[in-house]
Amino acid sequence: MSKLWGGRFTKQTNELVEEFTASISFDKEFAEEDVEGSLAHVIMLGECGVLTEEEVTQIQSGLITVLNKIKNDTFEFSVTDEDIHMNIERALIEEIGPVGGKLHTGRSRNDQIATDMHLYLERKTKHFISLIEQVQRSILKQAADNVDTILPGYTHLQRAQPISFAHHLMAYFWMLERDKSRFEDSLKRISISPLGAGALAGTTFSIDRSRTAEILGFMDVYPNSLDAVSDRDFILEFLSIASTFMMHVSRLSEELVIWSSQEFQYIELDDSFCTGSSIMPQKKNPDVPELLRAKTGRVNGNLFGLLTVLKSLPLAYNKDMQEDKEGMLDTVKTLDGTLKLLAPMIETMVVKKENMKKSVQHDYSNATDIADYLVNQGSTFREAHEIIGKIVLYGIENQKYLLDLTMEEYKQFSPLFEEDIYELLKPQSVMNARNSYGGTSEQQVQNQIEYGKTFIRT
Figure 1 (cartoon, helix red, strand yellow):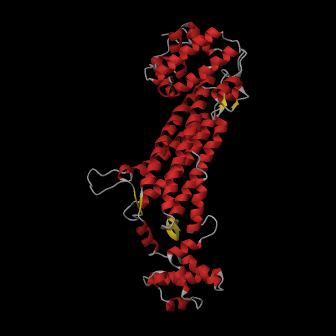
Figure 2 (figure 1 turned 180 degrees about the vertical axis):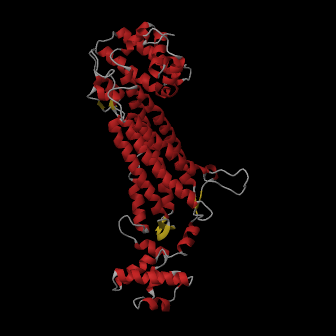
């Protein structure tokens, strides 16, 4: 079969070159977007008088037939036709005859593929925004059930202060909210139409690019034809946001893995999100969070891959830019799977409240409150800090925790101690004492959850 662009050439394309340069194996993902862009383009060509009403009707009918074949999985994609545009145009010409060749008037494959990716990424971004909200809902549900659940808070992975487990979960809610906000903001740069920019310099035909943008639902039109066909910033931005999102997922996954270990036993993941061992029947492995943690690497790799492809390219289009698609499609697939697993995994996990409570009763994470106590009794913070250090050392040497010490022992370190120190050092008291805005007290966490609900719109 001759190429649709083959007039300039005297030899057939080498088969290895054909296989190496063809992109249909992955850009067939844009098939529906490609037809959608073509339908908008042909409507505009008719309204501008470039095509007759009869030609427009014929081409529209042929495109709808092709689209139905694509949706019904009866369309046969061919490597010989290189990419999604040539596959569809070939099928259109076979369907309605030579008039199908007029569809390409006033555009190039360069602006066509850019249009496809803008349409595709706009839809996927909106889809991910919706899925992120589902994960946020699952966090809100677990948080609401665990406002009074006490968890050891950590810094440097060392026990720091007792906090509400709901407070810890809500930290991830706000991370996801920032991710969602970034995706929403990126739509301003995704929803721009390059259609009609041509190969790089525009077209001699009297076309209306604003009209096709309107039909396709784009917010704006690229004002520069060179930029329109060579811009891949919107994909880089998507990959960057996706990398940040996956970093947040990885941090949460790491904690789920740690918390579900025998050493911690703070949570138990539902059996449907775990697997067993082929030789150790007692094992219950947290495979899903482990894989989510690992898949962060491939999303980061896709971002750096495209940055490397684009870093030295002259304007406008270069074949190098064919490498912009596979990483983007892989990231879309990864995010889709991640988000669909994350929400039910969080919602169904069992929180082992008693184990968390026991942990905060057998550590020195309430030590900071002694400093505040002594300061309120008239000591300087620096003096109080030194006193507490000595008390903790004494406790370690005598295998006692702070609530185990007698008043006589406390008086050895400072005459400012009174009986009320014991009530103050209870984990629940320590947690609820942090009643500043954004703090871990039950009241503040409850306020935070109610505030979080206002960010859920769908």
